[in-house]
Length: 304
Image (cartoon, rainbow, N blue to C red):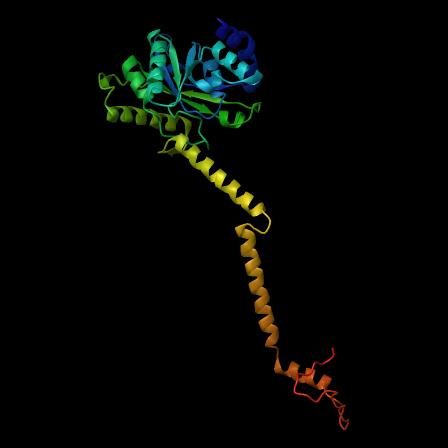
């Protein structure tokens, strides 16, 4: 009940007015019966814009972190996700994966629409990443079609980490339903599951126009995090007394090298200049040089 109150009276009208979302492929949205919406995942707001443009209710499998937050913000987030009918799932793998599968199947067996992000997490850089096979297993066990959905521009409207979205138009492109009934009874074959998942991701790539990366988004996030930590450690080391960043050390070495070359060049000045210098320091013709106070063999130091 609260879902429809938010969608039609509170949040829905405001979002439609501000963001004016456009939709392509509305004819591919089933009027009745269960189905899976498999979408790319660019932004937190994907779970808001997609249900908004679909006439029927869409239930998403949301990570359990959204339901266990602390403080005022955490409680508000949990209340919001519960109100719009999202189902919490643990993404840690193992038994948690089976629990997520069962949660999704319950939604499908009620004859409802289920929303899934096959990538498993938001894209770290706007590209489309390899899909997890859970969507394929759910489609086979639930005996439902998969409808590929491409979210367009939501990452620009609300990038990761930004709380207040930027007001701009976003789009939703709905593809034709994919029927995998030819694989019925093969939900335990990992090669079949991978083949189905790859077919879904291919359709998402065509719909979204994103560059496809054949690795999991979580792996890319781990790489980016490791690189950021290494850079932070490098900067901390450079900030310590008596240390310098490699770039600064290289610049100092280059400067010292140029100084050495300049000194050598000065030592090899033109012979005519040497003769002139000697003439300037020589006594006048016929003058007798004053004897040194010390006739000893030590070196003579000329006054400048």
